[in-house]
Length: 273
Image (cartoon, rainbow, N blue to C red; front, side):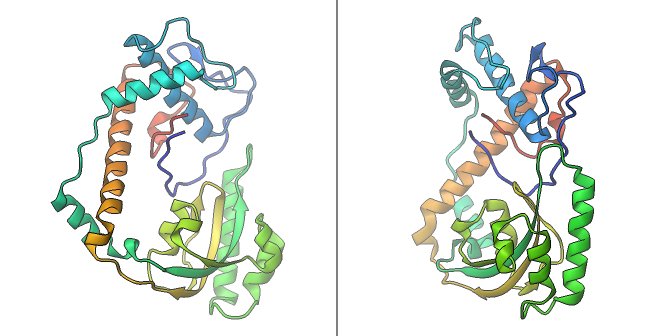
């Protein structure tokens, strides 16, 4: 699967009683199946690409997708070939790399770490997202009022043990010392975004759900010269360009398709299985 994971608001699962979602008349799931909105969009994007691979002769018209949304190995290869043909990513220039590095210099530090703890309100299939957010917001307000100093094991630790859906809840939500590479990208962006210590003022959204996060301590790490990280910078720019181009290509395919029961406009990034 190719994804660009970002920090997004969790969305409710599709109703099991609703109509069968489809792309150009091809069903994306079995009748009565319940899928999250993200899973449904993922299947829709995959099906758009699978059908385009058929239209361009890269895939046999006899190919079919299963009710579980899993495409055949042949279809997967054809989709990869289609993307390689249609999604062209230019090589980033030296100037673009230097500008990116200057704007995101902290991202390329080595040894940067944070000591954090969190309270996870996990998003599961069929859950009422509004109620989950209300619970998480109430918890955030409570710990900011009663445990905002960032010291000790007071309200935050008690709330973690009572509410967190993460095993770390048993330890008061303590995650220990973390580097950027040890957490999901959408969490890393929030944990390492600034130099503050204490309870973050807003909920952090991730693929796992909603997090109330407290930064207990930071180690800033060491800055790396541009010459040492030129390859990593270029890779980051290529990935960003690829995601943008793929999103635009999927939007083009969606604009020419009959789409029923799935909101592709709500997708922040393309999800391709």
